[in-house]
Length: 301
Image 1 (cartoon, rainbow, N blue to C red):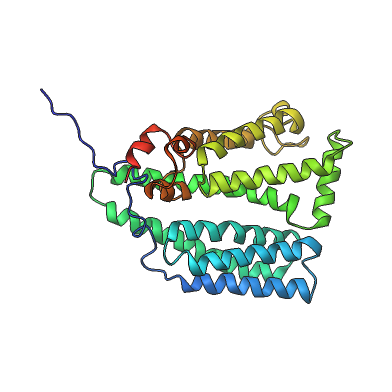
Image 2 (spheres, one colour; image 1 turned 90 degrees about the vertical axis):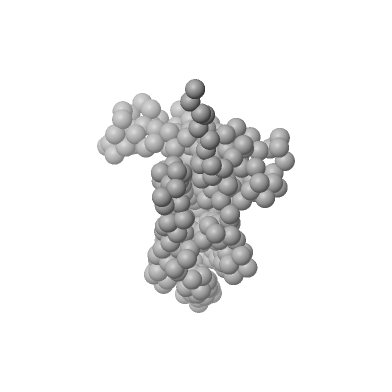
């Protein structure tokens, strides 16, 4: 009789990781802190002196960068995963707002900072891979990092759409308001802009950062189905995204597949959910919103 296969506790690499070890080992934190601080200083300059960041865009981007800097200084050195993700989201919002308003000094400094943040993530993933190298779970751990990159890309991509709706200033807001009116929404177009922006922000937080990721992925699925079936018309224009009459369903299907995958499994270890589960902070009845049954078993401390 064959003996049953007994897997190590970290076979899926999801939550059994010691989060004190899940961090870069080569690149220190100070370049990221300096980069975010410099981005904040230049943002204040463009807001108060050159006014290239107008009205609402000026103070929204500044406040988001204050959040990013505070997380980079106080959270990331002690808990890299949570601090990095909490810094990344507001930083990306400010970067997007600067791009939409043509604030070139902010764009240049933020682009340098973005390179540092990307290198930090690569360093963290490579260091984690090195710890698992040669162990039975190494291959599955590599697949988990692959899924993490896809999740971050598609989840945080929603920040671009959210930022242009509710953070980029009145000019962008009114342009989108007129766009909704062109879809036949004569009354309440402004409300639809704000509602869409908030839902996309929630999607970025939940899927991109991995906070109650399964719930956020399900809501994202419903949102994009409603938006594209009810208003966008992508499903009636054929497959290709780049068509003369507007985009087809190619990109929409990519979004649905990625969000569907996160809905099935959860966000994995490089997420806020991963840390919450590892610390046994999430009550048992809420854990289903973070990960599936297998993840909840392997996530026990």
